[in-house]
Amino acid sequence: MAGGQRRVLELAVLGSLHETPLHGYELRKRLNTLLGMFRAFSYGSLYPCLRSLLEEGLIAEEQPAQPTIVGGRSKIVYKLTAEGKERLQELLTQAGPSAWEDESFGVHFAFFRHTEAEVRLRILEGRRSRLEERLDSVRTALARTRERLDSYTLELQRHGLESVEREVRWLNELIATERRASQEGPATDTTSSNE
Image 1 (cartoon, rainbow, N blue to C red):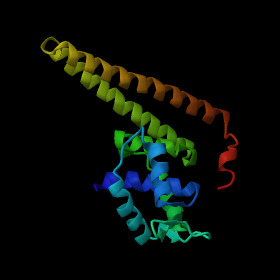
Image 2 (tube, one colour):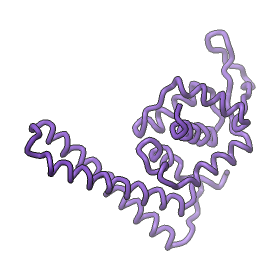
Image 3 (spheres, rainbow, N blue to C red):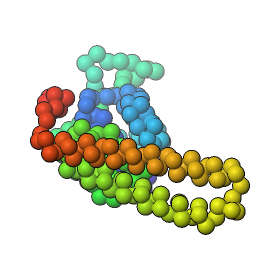
Image 4 (cartoon, helix red, strand yellow):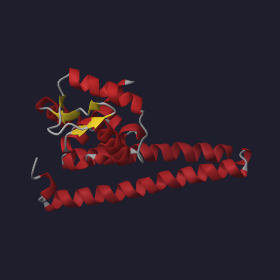
């Protein structure tokens, strides 16, 4: 697994385990529910990632108090360690270009509630900038090749442009909300009071 993909999966796993300890099947299910619409990940990459996180001491295995037997063996529950919490915070503060890309933006966004406002704003603005660059290049390419494309290809191009434009509008709304919130001062977030 490439380094960027590994960091994305690492963030997704650590962020999910930050919520509650989970066994492998529950973790797979949560990741699929949480991140499925943003990015597909290979289940074959989850267990090697878990092994690596275990070796690094970022997560620990725990036997449940009431052993649950599945197919003749008990389920192993994974939980975040203190080092894992530190690594999660480190990953959540990364707001550079890798956080703006298609592969990782959705994962970062899914854990925004654990991310500082300044970092959220940088990621949102970076993502918007990346998409605006993409819009410009697609519009330019489309203008040059429009007469050579069939109606179906043109329709597909139009659909792609509309999707990116819609995401840019959504990002503009999120950025405006973040800026208003930062001007109003820190709000009390009851969901993070138990962290």
